[in-house]
Length: 434
Image 1: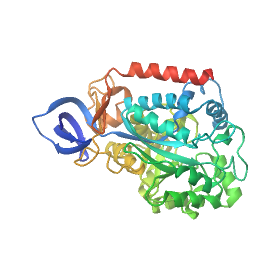
Image 2: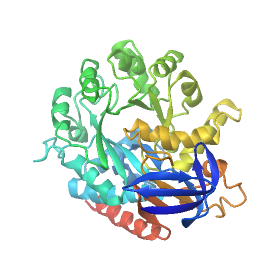
Image 3: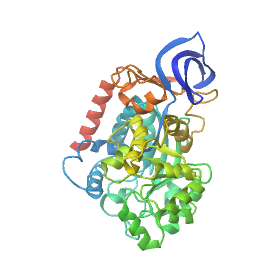
Image 4: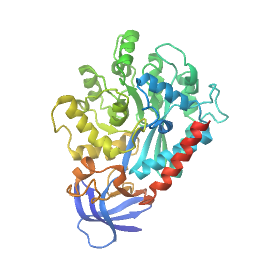
């Protein structure tokens, strides 16, 4: 048994002093505020963060797509260039380094939206899930949990066959996708969910196959209304919005997450809320790509819980994603005070983990997984901010994380960042040398 005395910790929706946590077999067996014994852990401690939307290979693009003007679509061309260079071994190296960066930022679980399945010519590997298994192994070696959101991708756009590097993404049809994904097995640190890449990439008549495979217990994610152009194309193809198409074919529901959900009608908002579909916002990517600002608060009020992701990894910092939801709402509405710090912290922890199929994580509470992220409350960014939930959400950054524990094991200590940076540099260098 491990007994730690947390100087200050987010417990039961509030920051409390001198919290004794006892840990056995990776779970909290006791949580006692106001205690006096235990191994001291200085700082401000919160539950582990859940990164609900990741494309690990996009990490190789950071800083490179900013060198010229362009659009989402020119950015996509650069992303496709990276996708064409990877094999399972190189993907393992890149993803492990990326997940280690996440761990150092306080992320204890990642939802990996995985669509890079096959060889460059579209031929399956000897093990058809080799690329997905590389991601699972990368997370294991980095020390974080993963929900592999294996993605169905069948079309480059409303009736168009996959083109170029997209052949790496595509299975023959949704039934073939389900057969391949069915061979993946869950482990204690990894679970398998489903994803619909988008309404343009999966024909409407095949969406129900993906939804049926996911059922009522597996996470099911989908890119939704990220681009106005895609919305227009969907209306032209189906005379319905993307949200309406997903709803019509059984994709929406409490285990579903709509990623981005940026350009929605009022009817879309009502439909997502009435089905209790999660909305995953990725503000640092959405602003990087110029996508726009989605209606986060209206979705929440309608009944669609908020989660957060780092998506393209222009930044890996869930603290920045949390506050960006509020700050972007301020810009869009010219008003302050849409989201409170506790609400945003809940989205990044408890709600996020539940949406990824880990309802036993995301809180410092007896019986839950022992994930602890400790922050320095006296850094140049956090000093004088009150050492409370507002410090976490509106002042801290990933650089303020001093220690990370996942399932009762310390996976990041202060001082690890330089070595993680070197590993990232080596892995990304290999990608661009291919």
